[in-house]
Image (cartoon, rainbow, N blue to C red; front, side, top):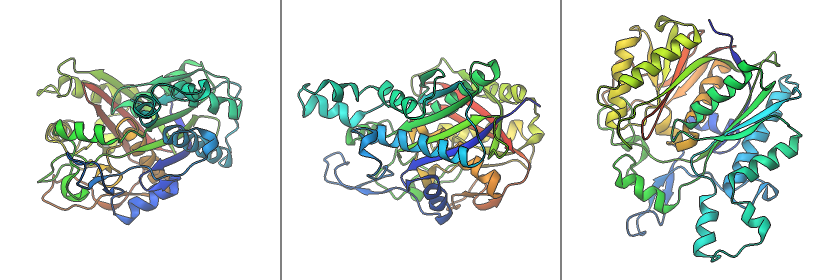
Length: 384
């Protein structure tokens, strides 16, 4: 088995609120984070279901919700890791997984401010600024960069961080994945694509691996993690993983999904484990037809009959560039707490679907995440 990297600290800002315990408690409640918001329909007169990050955070962290959420989740992860015995090394790096950054501030820049801002406020629009201020806050001096692979960005960031650690480039890495982008325009275009559903209650609209699923309810989040082998109390270990690309279509998966299959098997090989070691597939599971079909087929093809699957997207929402990080955090917290709070089953389902609160033992988890445009990722996680 490959040498694992510990997930030593976790921080989260989600539609449930500010802090990782809000995320966990929200999932335990089995109630979706999404609420009705006005101004999001085609004519802006119909309330829509979306899971936005609520107002909050420290204004000193930035003008926009993106920077405030990013800084808050990363700060919570660092504080959490230190409380669990982590001592930072000399080279602490930062990997920030994003798709789009300060969309609200950029929108105002063009439509409200007419391109006129103080230089300091203009610089705050750049995704590098929140990274820079975070590194300054803690005096971290390792490499810092953004990673983007659409909805697979969280997994891609995690594998980038592990590669840095395995290569000895850094002593520790803070991984952050942030997506706070639910403007009415963005929600509208994802519904036009036919993948997002905003006019139905979340558990009615998003039913991964169940009959009647129509797609996903959109969400926002920022999740921070400290990755290191310099703590004796990690939540879980990252054993390995893989990435590939379909090179097929800007939105659709290759119907034969050869590259998704290869990504899954390469991830197992990279982690040094067999399919029989995987107890759980923490699926991408957005509730769309093509993703459900692909992941269900690979679940049945590659893994033994007692391997179960689940997706927390019906509850947390599909948090786009931060989605995989939300789901990794849930799996890691689940290993420490002995259970995972999966969404309830509401319709006829695949027989392997796990639902409700299910116990987690020592079996490994394969976390898959598929990004629009052909980005395939899979990560193997295990208990401490």
